[in-house]
Length: 224
Length: 224
DNA sequence: TGCACTGCAATTGCATGCAACCCGTCAGGC
DNA sequence: GCCTGACGGGTTGCATGCAATTGCAGTGCA
Image (cartoon, each protein chain N blue to C red):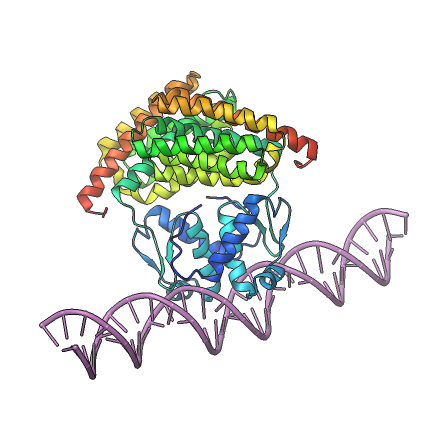
C-alpha cells in the first residue's frame, strides 16, 4: 500500500483506512464480509463520513468492491483470478530478487541475511503467527535490496492483495521448514550475484506457496 | 485502474473520479497542480463531499498526494523516481509480451496484428494525438494477449501513472516511425512464439521511450 | 534589521440531516 | 398457481454547517 508519511496527527480517515486494510490483510475481515458504514462508524466512534472515505480508498487498491447503493464487500476471487494473481506476484517477486542480486550494498545484504536467520529461528520454534511476520520481513528485505522503491511499492501492493488467501498456508510445520529451505536457495543466489537463479528460485518458491494455498482453499471450500 | 461495470447510473463520485483521472493521464492536469475541493465542487456542480471521495480514490492509486489540511496535489516526481517507474513499466510490459507469445488464440493474435497495422497507418499520417491512441491500443492488445487479466490490470495501472510524462515524447516524427520499427520486432517475436525475444525487445522499446522522455523533460525543466 | 510570537483568514476534516435508491415482500390480476 | 407491480424498510449518496488545523501577515522586541 502507499505508505504515507503520517505526520504527527493522523486524521480519522487515515486511521480507519489503516486499521481496516490491516484487518483485511491479516484475514480478520475475510472475503465476502460486508463493510457496513453505520456499524463501522459506531465501532470507530466517528460519523459515517470518514468511514466512507476510508472505504473509497480501500476500493481503489482492490481491498473492497462497492456496488452503488448496495455497500462494499471484501472481494471474493474465483480460482482463476487467484491463479492469475499468484502468477503476477511470483513474477514481481522474481524481478525483485533479480535486481537484488545486482545490488552490492553490504548493509542491505547483511539485512537480508539477518531476516533469513530470523525466519529460520522462528520456524524452528513453530510459532506460525511469528513466522508470518518474519517471512514478511524476509520478503521486504529483498524488496529493499532490489534498490527500486517503486518496484517495492507495486510488489507490496500485489502481495497484500493476496494476503488474505495466504493466511492459513503455514498450518503444517512441514511447510514451514520447506519454506526455509526454499529461502536458503534464494538467498544464496542473491548473495552470489546470480540474478537469473535468484529469479528462478523465487518463482519456484511462490509456485509452491500457490499450490499450498490452493489445497487449503479446496479443503475449506473458500473459493467459489 | 480498477475497471467498474458502471451500471446504468454512475454516482457523482464515480464520474468525478473518472474525469479527473482521465485529465491527469492526458496531462491536462499536470504534476504540481493543486486539487482544490471548493473549486472542483463548483466545476462539477456538486457539494464538496463527492469531490473529497474522488480525491481519496485518486490518492490511493497514486494520482494525487494529500497533505493533511493542506489539500491534494498531482504528484511531482524526481528523475530518480521516474527512472524507477519506467524500469518497472518496462519489466511489466516485457512480462506481458512474454506471456502473449505463449497464447495461441487466433482471434487475439489477429487483434494484435490489426492494432499494429493501425499504428503504422496513423504514424504515416503524422497525427500525433491519434498515434498516442493507436499506440495505447497496441499495448492493450498485448495485455489482452497475455491472457492474464490481473497482470493487465497492474500493468495498466503502472502505465497510467507514467502517462503524464510520456505525453510529449512523440513530437518528432522520427521518433514516431522509430517506434513503429520497434513494434515490428516485438510483434514478430510474439507471433513466432518466442517469449524471450518478445520480452527482450519490449524492454528495449521502453528503454528508448524512457530516454526520449528524459531528454524532453530536461529540455522543459519539468523534473525537479 | 532580523527574528519570534500572535491573531486572522482560508481550507480541510468531520458531523448531521435529508433524499435517492435497492431489495424483499405482498397484494392483485391473468 | 405464477407473474407483475407497488409499497416499505433500510442502506447508501449527497448537501450543508461547524470545528479544527494550517499558513501567513503584521507587530513588537532584541
